[in-house]
Length: 238
Image (cartoon, rainbow, N blue to C red):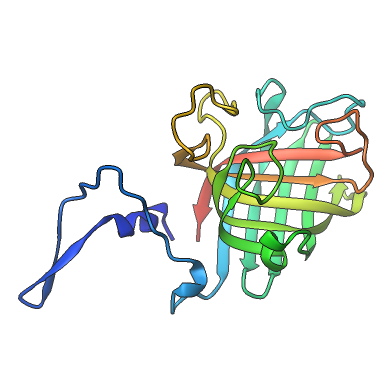
């Protein structure tokens, strides 16, 4: 599946002698109408993606007082590895696996069970939704963005084969470009914003994911004792 399929609705067509002729794409001020996945007769709910060019915000085991949102990209640094996603959005089942090479060792993050924490999460896996910002779904730490796919639930992590986290909350989202493709910064909130659209670049795509502890720590941002945050700037659909 290609992102280009999302712009088909921008084309208008007229029937000529039993055929179809596509007219010019000239729609000043037009809004795009996008059908929900389950409105498509052929929708099977399965998404298979991989992601690479991965960055970590900060490191493992940071001292209290850290900012693991990292919107200014000050602590963002490249790490090795890949992300593999193979899920059934209808059944809310499937796998999320991140294999990462960090300074501390080989980190493996696995989603073990998808779970709905709030209604917009649609059973634990949701497709084609707005999230964050003023969307009403998710927190306001990130700008509003269109998400092709997102998942929430519980997962485990190992470091060099030894258990690091067990039954921690995890989340991933495949979205429009929240981060600048070069600087990796998040332009949010955007001064002199002219549109109600989110502060994102729809010409790019990324995968954000994290694993976090159930225990809170108000000294941190987000206020969790553990919040290991990563993002990937290259996404492949299969």
